[in-house]
Structures are given as structure tokens and as C-alpha cells.
Length: 232
Image: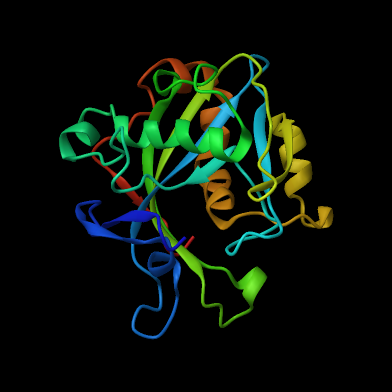
């Protein structure tokens, strides 16, 4: 976390610079909501339309043990190929930097080989601005949290070979929409990432119900909007 440099932003997703993951995720006096930075969330589906979930490792500093979408992380400054998307790449929906970051992190977290899910497999849908302290892990005065503009990436591929990194992921599962509803019922006792819960409550049903359009067309593409869900 001290070495990786996140891309810092203004509220319009304009790049303002870069800062360490530690700095961006610290909710402390002087920056009580951390530093706004760019992120991505991958939703990977198999040919049957099931969504791959992961449970974050217990050793993670932020949001350990929570279930969430396939892969969630950050494009970084200083990577090769570049993971920094300038305004023209956002405006045309190509976002190659975010897609390169997604390929990198699928390999790092889940052991997915790039040839199984290349950058070209991803469909960019929209962006979400949210902020969430990690109160589940660290209590009401949590010194950690997420404050992100999150790029949503969908992909549907043949079954991938998984080799989860135990420092990142403790479990994986493919689910149907109905199985996800059951898992997210309060009686399940399972913990969920705040960003995934926000996406489920506001967007996921319509995207999943029209999965062919979501992964194969620009029907849900929004390049001129950042959904402000900081109170969600």
C-alpha cells in the first residue's frame, strides 16, 4: 500500500495527481474521507450468465472478509502499459488504462491468465462516486475507508482457471441472480463490500437481466456522467 500510487481526482473525475494507497485510504483528521481516487469494479460472467464473486482475505487492511464482485482495485500511476486514462479515452468509452489495470489485478488476485480475459473482453458501462468508511472492521472511528470514482467493467467469457492469491482472496463462487439475493439476505450473516452493495441496489438487476446488451453493446454506456452515490 505504501508503494502503489493511486490516481487522485476532483469530483468531475479530472486527474489532479497521484498518491500512495495508504494516503488515499486513510480517514484521519485533515482528510476525514481520505483522498478521492480512481478505481474499477470487474463483473465477470460465465457463459451461463452466472457472476463470479470473491470473498476478500481476512488479512486485508481494508474491508477484510467481505464478499464482493469479481475483482475491485485501482488503476495505478507509473504502470506499463499505462493505466492512466485521459479525458479523450473516457469520452469515447475505450478506457484502455482501466482495462489494463483490470487484467493485471485479475491475475494478481485470482490467478486469471491474460489470454483468458484480455483487455478487449471488457465493456465499460459507467462511473460511480461513493465514499465509505470501513466501520465493519474498524468501528465507528475507523481510520480506513474508500473514496472512489469507480469504473464499472463487464465481461462474459468461457470458464476461467482460478488460482486465488491467499493474501487477497479466501473464497470464490459463481452465482445466479437468485443465489445472490439469498446470500445478501440479512439472515445469511455474510458481510458485503459497500461498493458492491451500492451497485446491487442501484444498477445490477437491470444490467444482469439484459446481460447480452451489457456485454455486447453500448446500451448502458455512460461516458458523460458520474453517478454521485455518496449518501447511498
